[in-house]
Length: 136
Image (cartoon, rainbow, N blue to C red):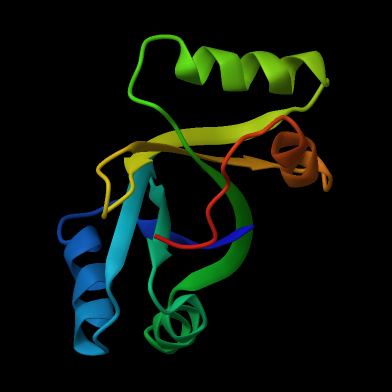
């Protein structure tokens, strides 16, 4: 499974800049970033090249953050590919907490990244022939 950094931040001007500035100061490269917001705070999800160091420096900067394990599957860039993955997951009664799409840097192929609380999901998907990635 892939390590993802999740953190909370106030929903105010410059919030994302402050996060990227901390990471840039420590030469931590961001591969993917998803920002969700509400009226008062935002949840930022990051996949970075050095997740353990990112958590350390973000905590030192005052952010509440944690490491989450997520599943990332390289997809073909064809209609129905994501539907096939989700069909397999649905058929196994696996609940997805959230999902987002990114791209694999070397090939440019789409990658679906998702979080589930089912511990055997990665093994199940590999058994179905899906290509899971450990890093970007």
